[in-house]
Amino acid sequence: MGRLICLSNRLPLGPTPSGGLVVALADTLAERGGVWIGTSGELSETPENRFTEIEGGPFRRLAFDLSPEEQASYYHGYANSVLWPLFHGRTDLLDIRGDYLAGYKAVNRRLAKMLLEVLEPDDRIWVHDFHLLPLAHDLRVLGAENRMGFFLHTPFPTPLALQALPNGPELCAWLSHYELVGLQSERDVRNCMDAMVQIGGATELAGGFIHLEPRQVRIAAFPIAIDAAEFRTLAEEQVTKLPEGLVKPNRRLMIGVDRLDYTKGVPQRFRAFGEFLDRHEDWHRLVSLIQISPPTREGVPAYDDIRQETEHLSGQINGTFADITWTPIRFINRPVPREVLAGLYRAADIALVTPLMDGMNLVAKEFVAAQDPDDPGVLILSQFAGASEQLVDALTVNPHDPEQMATAMMTALAMPLAERQRRHEGMMQLLLKKDVHWWSKGFLTALG
Image (tube, rainbow, N blue to C red; front, side, top):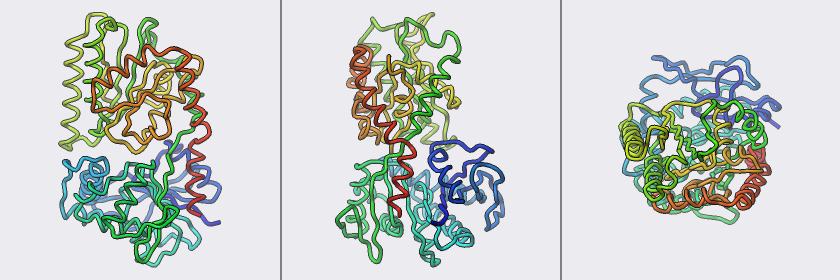
């Protein structure tokens, strides 16, 4: 069997690259002499049309640079100002410009030409995420006949939302050039197949296949996962290293961990917590919320707005309810190391994972994996997160409904130990069985 060629927008860097995808694919890439290709994160006024080898690490890595103009049109423009809001149901935030699409296509064509130079006939290609949608099409134009799979880490939009994209039929045609399109949930599979038929003019066949002349593609759900056993061990180790006084014996702790993005529902979460405090004065000083939200895409108006709204709400709630011994919300607007998060998850009584729309959301799975099975916390999970299809023992909520969210918080705080244990056991068994290695093996087996 040939090599596995994995492509993503950003290359995992450093001597020991980390992240969920790296965990999933490192062994496969190392065993088969595979290659990971992506942008270096560096900008060059005159980027070379060839890859640079990144030395060291557990597998081979090839990087390429973007120019400032490519970064503006391909990444900030079409990928993050058009596809990201579209795929998360925010068509009101689309910034559609012809030069964005032109730049996006040009980067993918340039990458296809560079890849063709190093490609071998029996290589299998696995393309990740919305930045590289056209790559298979561009490689086919150049004559590549390799088996190619695509995995989308975000949700897939409804056909109605996709109609807001001027080149919606073209996007469907791009997908048809893969042998396999993997999505996070059955909801996304249905949206994608309906869009391919209604927008792309394809024909739906049996077994999850779509025919769009002249090609046939299989569309299926492969819910991404974590290494649950590894994360459980990390959480057990790290909870003992948390700063003294962070977790108080007479105070319950809620936690939320999300990038500061308008899809994550952090303002709605704060409003719901404010509703809870307004309803339950007897819980004042007995419960607090830590919200960790590293900044993302600074300088983009929609992200600046969400930061200001979130800071305003946390200040307003603290101003209304806090006293000299208790602050209801601790809002941390910077990254926190993964090992510290693992300890915090273990210590927390409740996780609020309430995005307005999400492909999967691995915070939900990490929280469950981190829990003490003898005294587990409770997961409150948005019905719009892909994880809700698997984690059916969570308390599922509508993040747009602050009253329902506040009720779920009270339910979680009052939940008996036996019920918490039952819910946790069901979810943990699933996470151990369907871990990140199960995910990658399943996709690659289906790719053939």
